[in-house]
Image (cartoon, rainbow, N blue to C red; front, side, top):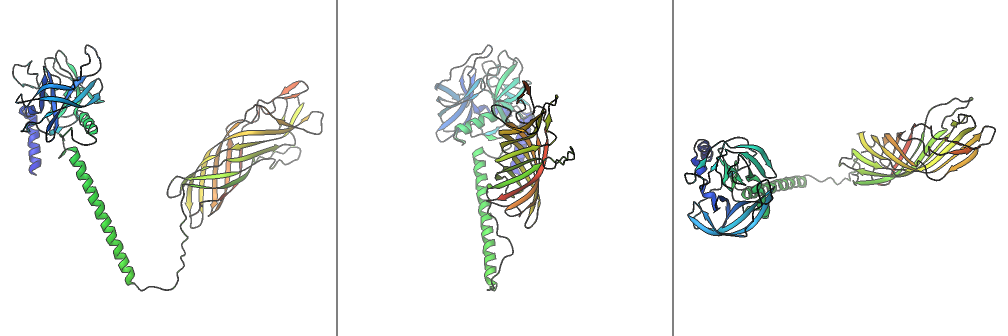
Length: 490
């Protein structure tokens, strides 16, 4: 409660008293003329501070040299002076934030509370005026300062009064109680300047320090301690929680064992009625075969055309079990296919009635890819639905044709380049899946035309295109699947 009151008291002072801004004076490091830095950390022997240097040429601004060492810098309002040596650097857009270290004096006067991001939209901003431009040493700039563009790659764009007189490296302080960033450039003669976001600086120094807080000891606004202490406390709490949970489970297991040992043992052999749990794999495999037809009756000359258009397939089944419960899977079916079509009155007749195609067949390899979803399951069986896509490659085609005056058909084979790629959509409904097999209804729909649609049949000096006008079609049939590893059902 006392800590909360002190925190609220600090916020109230910050909102109403510019002396709060002045409390960060000992965090500043004077490097040179209109050039300042900001202390971020200390250890037993060193003080660490950051400075900003321009790295890229922009309008009316040129890159600055990054010194490996600085002969003398001033701390605590010029009360302490020391040499500085470069430690690390981090790039933010056109600027580089350079980390330096100096020997630490006996007294530690800078304050760690607080820093935060300029993405925070509340509060008012203030900073120090450059003492070389001000009529008072360390005067406070309280003119209207506003964010034009929020942090992007660590850089924030501000609007300031044109007479603000703010030097490079000065901290931008929010009245809610934290340092939000440091000025990347002097405001002399400018109303729009760039600032490096303090939260991004903190993250960069944390990473460059090997994911520790050696180079950045400041406390984030709203937190109770530096990042590494909070992370260590969270780790210890998680470990303690895990130990407590493990102890509780061990005690519970020991209690059950003790209770079980007190019960009289039944020497009668018990046979479990529950099925033995099936070992689960990500990949199961098996075989599949189906026969399909285009079930359209066509009465021609009193002849029934039933099952004279048919296809059969046989091949492997590769089942990818993509969830632990076994309700969803992806099945790949690399297989051989054979299509046959016959029509006594002619599958196709030329416009001049000189040529009639009687039968046609082709062989192909295809790879259906089917997503399957189990609809429901019982104790020993299940029902599933699947949908997918099947590309194919035709590698052989035969047909027979009749000339107008002929009575016996002529058999031909197609060779050479042609339309050999096929595409189909696939639908499956497996009505009964049991331990090692399943039976279902399958449906396919052609997405491409008939193979070899550009094939030409030369007859009596005329080239005919018997397969050009063949339409896309659909087929339905029955499929049988067998599992060689894994199983369906429960």
